[in-house]
Length: 351
Ligand code: DOR
Ligand code: ZN
Image (cartoon, rainbow, N blue to C red):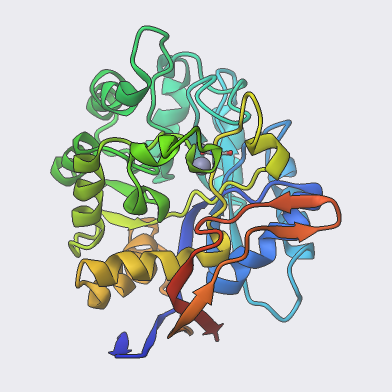
């Protein structure tokens, strides 16, 4: 059980159910940040080229493990990137061999490295049928990309046009609606069957869409799905802190080099891994729900995925935490979430 003294918060070791670890130099810089705070993480497959085969996922898992200090116990949980032509047999074999924990559905063009994603979800009905049969979760980037749909409506329209009919076709399919941003998503997940859950990022709990336009254009608050109106943020905060096991932690930590964010066509993504637990703790404390952080961060996710709970604990201390302006290695510079702010909690240790 979690213990919360005034100045110390200790609870069961958490997992991050949605993270981008990238590859190469970026992987080397960011993987340790996630492994510091989390015991396991669902690693997104949107590399270039995307992770579409068992062999690619095995090799990527090795590169991730090689970039983390040997003494650090951390398990990367791999995902398969669904394309129009991916083979159901390859997906099922990866699952059976303990390589693919889940599959990720990116609508083609929805976000970073999603060009090879699915152009029409009916193209993967055969894969979804197989996943339903073997109990393999589908992780969904829930946005339509039609040019006539307002960017702020993409999630709500996806739920209505794509997700709801998909669940009618595959009522037993386990689905995680990732990084939800709207009241519509909260309501849909809450009212759906037990096989439907959602992750909620730290950043969508902290700011609304105004953050992107505070006195000028602010690329470090741009992510996808894009932040929505304040009433949506409030719905997300209520869901995350409700104790409802359908809502659990997924940071969507998505590092991009500073120059790729501060650009005429800036990349979407917020690098929250360095301060993920401190940020969630701030939100839960503001909502007077610190006693519910452990369920959200450490219990509901593994229960949904059918995995054991972690054995160890993490501890946060109430001590001013000045977040650096930039995390760097060599010429690679990445701005973390909350850069330049002072947070109330400081991550102390994970054992
Ligand atoms: O903000 C985002 N960044 N959202 C996504 O869906 C993808 C991610 C990335 O990979 O950069
Ligand atoms: Zn993501």
